[in-house]
Length: 321
Image (cartoon, rainbow, N blue to C red; front, side, top):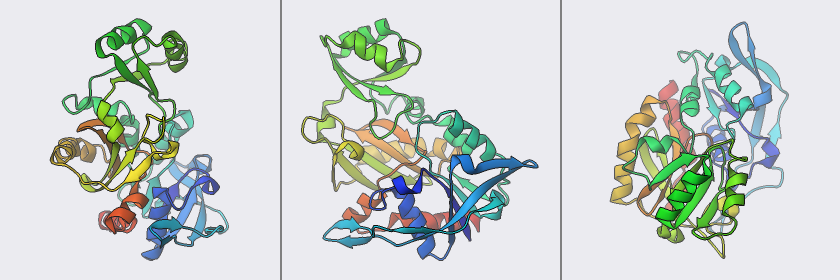
């Protein structure tokens, strides 16, 4: 089969970390033709979604001393061809946030793919519906107390109640722009002005969970089924556990409470066509639902001696055959 991956610039991906590369590598190993394209490679011609597709050949990573290692030249690209995306059996939307205008328009292009011919993972509609910060608000019993606002006075009142808060931009990724705010912080006004773009954009504000010091757990769900997890623990003076900002990864187990979280959100994920999802859990609370390009499977593979890339591709095979 032919699989197309819509990605960030290939040279910026880390084959030892990025789940996208793990999936492409697995698809190649399982005998599929793998192509890549980018947001600016998408078009609509005669009502059909087209893309400039480049065939890619990957040199798989190797596990050495419990670390992934890759060749310096870990991929080779073939000549680009301009084809309808319906010439592929599956299209993977794996572009990182932010969900900006270009990203939004790309999902509209992908809407024009005939699902009887080609499946898109995750669903363009689902990606639009699932802002990675806001989507979790549909499950109020599972999340820490949260507000979304651009009002300085509303945030000040919330801070007075909770004493310590976490501020998140609604369009960020990998911990970008997340702030820790304590009562009495003399930078309060400036932090809120910067975060809200001078009151023009709402932000998410959550009560601070002290258990964040013990880790921010990433759980991968494949078609609603939790298939693995990794704990991301803050290091040094950093309060964020994200791997992108230096969080230490550790082996972990999925708890009974976390299984209940997965069971609760799965019907909604399935309804919205969200097949590959990464949720974040702190102290038994759901904090985010990541649907654009969730990562973590390389780390889970090491700790659990599994291959989630191949498990994912084999499941996709079952859905498109």
